[in-house]
Length: 338
Ligand code: PEP
Ligand code: MN
Image (tube, rainbow, N blue to C red; front, side, top):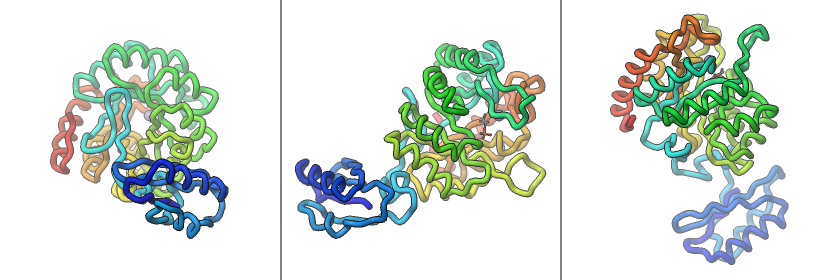
């Protein structure tokens, strides 16, 4: 439920509403607005007390939120959220570009990509230090050494960094070395990790589970919001389907669905959807055309020698073309890529 206070309701009245919500066994979550304060009524119990709250002085109305997610819903938060990461941001009318290697392999490799991403106009440097690989015999990432490399390169090329956190064991160290935490498709419903990552107060890039519905994805984001961390960006990265011409099927239609149902920004990852380099550009453009607030792509100086995901990584020259083309599509849909 949401309690809508009257315009310019006094702090005393807002405090009283919060106390009454607590007495009913719920947790109040006030959200001050320009003229009115909303107070969310959070909790797992079946809803009761609506009429009681409605009758309190300076309460204008009490609405029930019709969706299973509350804080992520447009009913609770009608305006688009813009997530700040250092001096840059994701959301609104800007298209953000996150790029970098699948895995951090060495300082030289990461530096070469970092310089290329910066020179082409990208906004974030990504790279995996702990890799969630399907096979235990595949390259598992450089671990803490990789975190140190991306932090150093991010500072040198002046780009904020995005690194996946694979479990709670490595959460603290990953949060220490990176600006934004990524939670990968295999962990979208790892609720312990979602809550612990939220409590670091770092911005979180939450990838859609490869067989998760739009509703399940927003509910996963709700876990993060419910811990008091509002800086969540969703990522459509392709889902498992029956097709075999592509690694995953990019669910372009999920992007307008997310934009309608939630205020959180949504970006598109065409690299993990496509699995093949030649599909990355068209899928990136499709994502932006469909309303994505950003794009995340993998870039490697020598994909043939990459330790993971070589076939889908772009070389720096292709990345430059990608960003130039995204800029045109962004303009066509009323956005900018600066
Ligand atoms: C990644 O971005 O490095 C990654 C492993 O992606 P996903 O979780 O979407 O497979
Ligand atoms: Mn990858």
